Image (tube, rainbow, N blue to C red; front, side):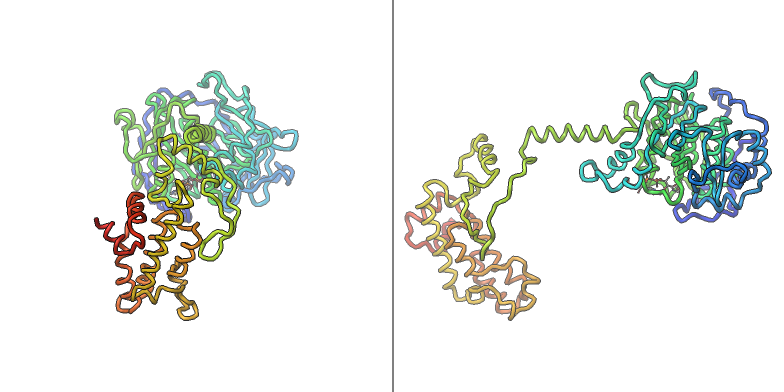
Length: 572
Ligand SMILES: CC(=O)SCCNC(=O)CCNC(=O)[C@H](O)C(C)(C)COP(=O)(O)OP(=O)(O)OC[C@H]1O[C@@H](n2cnc3c(N)ncnc32)[C@H](O)[C@@H]1OP(=O)(O)O
């Protein structure tokens, strides 16, 4: 078989909407690989049938067309968009030879599409595992999981984990010793082959080993590559897919190929080259590509002994490869890969280091455990996970609660208080200038009197008139569209008289500032309102929180503290 890459053909393929690749094959060097295992024997009828792209097309097409190999319709599966291509490429003759000699009792039926059924059928009608597996991984996931990929678990585990978790949740993993062949590099305890129990989604890694089922899958993958990589000559795709130095990791749903990655492991160099990677058009961006790549990495590490992957990524697929851990920086020593891999024009060489330990096919469990550990640590260090019942009161006018609640009685606040006290703080230090601590009754009276005085002074100011009442929406219809947090002297007065609202001086100052700032936000500078706010607010806008000591000085020494005195205190 001639494996030399052809020059890129710009021929007849029409671009897929999801793939506008411009890559082209410039040259391809396939060095002799002394380490590659000898290919398994292949019956002459099949090897004859697989020497050209046309033959393969006819094999797949005839499989689609073969009425004689019928199967119950209920078990038939559609290939979707690939159907047309199959029909186009059908010539039938090679397939008859192929089916007669190779498929034996494999049953195939189509209704305008390829329908595939394995040689054995499970008790509930689901496909049973292939016993002639090449020793490569088969992992099965229940199909129902696919529709939930994006919808469940996102809150708790993050989107990536949710997708992985949902695919994995339904997996019925069982070790299938029959699938391991002598000589396979399977680490002890590794579960390399899993088979379907109730699920219908499986991940397999196969090569051109002459096994009927694998050949049908490879043909299915070839059709997907042909569609999704329209600038790749079909002959070239077929050659690599059928080259026995290449392997293909595939995702198979109900025995129908959803997508796959074809790669060549250079075992002696410990790296692999990804030649093709694609998911069928209507199943893209559902998480299959990621799961597939994770299976590939685990397989390549544990079975092939690889440490790196290289690939020429099409420009439009660079984002996908980046998300799979590929980088444009190549760290692998040149002598390990140069001359081994094919060069592609228009593609970007990318590298991925395969981690020695990561459980690639079970990343979601690892991420979940990491989250658990971090969560437990946070719980150890803080109480932020405790949710207290809310406060049972309704807001009244001016934001004054109907029911008076001591701040210390608020659920959860004692926890904060304890923490603060343990840290050496005293209640006096809560907030900057808390009014009602200590001998609260007399203090409160003083603070109320003080704020009342301030409000009186503000009301008496010649520029106070625009601020005495709330703005009437009937006079200024759009006022409350623009000003979301209105304030006025009357509302402030109510808050002062409630003796509950302003528990710190900062709160009082904040209301005063907001009142003036609102006026300057809504009105333009040339208006009287703006000017009043600027003149009247000049003091309030400069107010700063005062210390308790300053307040004591004011309230003890000055019977009627005025804004001027306060200002003087502040400036002093
Ligand atoms: C070496 C080569 O073969 S290069 C050519 C690669 N193949 C193609 O371009 C063929 C057309 N495209 C496809 O077949 C598929 O879209 C693939 C193989 C590229 C990706 O498979 P998907 O199943 O779609 O990927 P999956 O759903 O796992 O997406 C994984 C992430 O990659 C992103 N992604 C998928 N495709 C692309 C893309 N072409 N560009 C940028 N980001 C992408 C997804 O949005 C997703 O991101 P998220 O994890 O933040 O949500």
